Image (cartoon, rainbow, N blue to C red):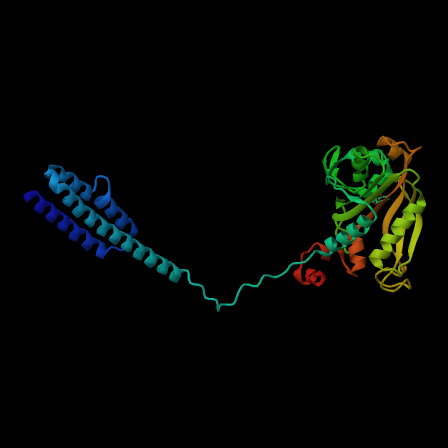
Length: 347
Ligand code: DAH
């Protein structure tokens, strides 16, 4: 009986002590530590329970009940305090992170395509609808692809017009996208229909119509029975889609080492309708591209038999196309990234 009393007292003492501590508990970590100290495997309650070993067998159930009641009470209290603390924490967090929805929001401005890319996308649509694939070529090119394979040997005067930036003796920044013709013919069998847009480089002084970096788009068609009629049809269609159906297209004989015959293509000036103005420099015509029937030397150099296949190629200056299309007076505007200028083209 004596022991039973002691047990009761001990339990009551522990109960009081723990409840007291729990009353002003506000910290989650401290709470967990206390829980372990009281309820844990080596905790105070377990210790008391162990002390019951000395009790006579008939008193043990009663003592067990006592211990369990206190354990249950304390457990409930621990849970209660725990949920109070987490409620407090949640409220504090909500207060901290409160959002003032009356503040004006941040405005995300919508960007737009650069006029060059806008024109390029139109070109891709136009040629895509005629079955052309879009290919890419490297901007750092070998002498072979940029000149040699295009029928421009080392001593050819055509190289003079395309003075450029050399990286090594036979490695340079490409002066024309025409190099993509060779790369395509080397890797694809006819029929071929491709366009290759991209940056090209020449050691030119900057002025209203020149830039050392500019853009071209190459086109190439190779198949059996391709003639100058196909060249004219495709290029006329393209010019009318870009400049409008009333546009007149003119083919002038010209020379390029990699085509025979070669032509230059002009369109009637959209500003004056052909009468002559500042944009067309009084000519009434604007030159937009060079083209021609692919030279047999170029075909055979790429392993394509010129007796069986023929084709045409063309090279468009994209910057020129963009400035004339949008009546932009100076090519430098395309490279300056002036937002006032660029915003006019947001479509
Ligand atoms: N590559 C020429 C240039 O930069 C343009 C050109 C002319 C490309 C005739 C062609 C072509 O494919 O057939 O001046």
